[in-house]
Every structure is written in structure tokens, then in C-alpha cells.
Image (cartoon, rainbow, N blue to C red; front, side, top):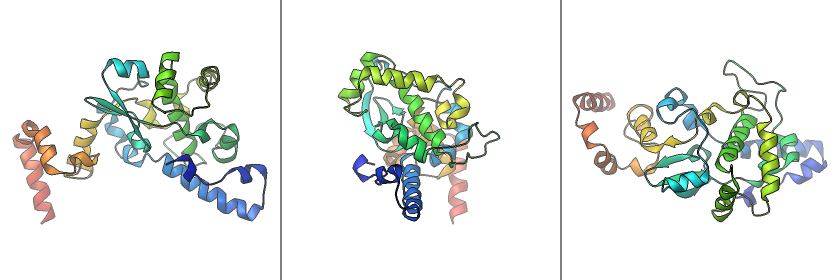
Length: 243
């Protein structure tokens, strides 16, 4: 979502009518939930170990060395998803670099919630922190910073010294993994494996991305797998169940 579409939060931070504030705060929370929506990946969290390694993403200069084109996405559940020649990266919105926004709309418990329970902010803070953590890894060097600026991934007004200071503050929370959404325990996610998980188990005959929502393209990419007896039996079972 474009920053211009964000609800106006400055009047709330500056103090206004409390009744209006409650309505506007609820609208802003709904907007944050949309901006940081990860429900499709949360639904297959137990499968992520085969989709991506439990490590931060590689810096942007290494993505170029792998001949991956940076493709901008505005969907967080596509952030760091990669395929043969490209990697999808969600742009870093300005509001996540605004301390008052964090204080006003991303407050949470002082300690991480364990046993899989959501924190008091509905998981918003952990998703936002995880997203920033991924950017700390993507933009680790000044060369990465230049690439990010060229690709319009970060706001134009952000400068390298300020970015380094923000990253140091973020990484000063140690260990950081209990504080971030579990999706960001894994960095880069392989699109072909996400598509297969969704195609066969979560949304039968529909992939994670629309490219595979057409049967022909999926069959072309996976003919050998689909020709196996096990796969034929699975597809037949799906068809019988739908009749």
C-alpha cells in the first residue's frame, strides 16, 4: 500500500478528541494489519523449514551476484520470496522509521509472549520488528544501501549514517528472535516450494502465486513429479472428494 493511502496519524499522536482517537486508532491498527499480513505463511509455518533456511536473507549485493532481479512488492507475504531470476522485496514504509508511530501504535508487552500466544498488540509489533530485521540483513553494507536507493526500496531522505544507527539500535536487542514474528526466523523463501505446498495441501490445484493458478503452467513446470504414481493417486483422491 502506498504511504499516501495510510490513515492520518499525526493528529492522534499530537493529541485530539479521545472519542475520535479510538475510532482512528482502530482504523490505523486495521491498516497496519493489512500492511503486515502474513496469514498465508503462518498457515504453513511448520513447512517453512523446507521452503527457506533458518537464517537472515543475504545482502542486496549478494542477490545481484546470484543474478536475481529485485522485484518490488507491496505484500509482506511475498517479501523475500525468490524464484530462478528474481527476488520479491517489499518496500520499507516511512512509518516504520518514525519513533512516535512505534510508541503510539506498535506498543506491546515489555517481555515476549511465549507458547505461541499473540502479544497484546495482536502480533503487529513482532511482524514489524521482523520486517525491519530482514532489512538490517539486506542493507548490511554501504553498497547494499546504494542498491536499495536505486531500487527505491527505502525512503529517499534516509541517509547511510542514520541507517547504520537505526540498525545498531535494532540489533542491540539480543537475542532478537523471541521478539520477531516466526516467519522472519527464515530469510529467503523458495517460490517453487511454496507453490507446491499450496497446490497439493493448502489450496488444492492452486499455487501460492497466481502464475500457477493456471493448470498448464504448473503441469509444464512439474511434469515429472505429476507423472509419479503417488501424485496421480493424490489428484484422483481430490477429484473424487469434489464430486
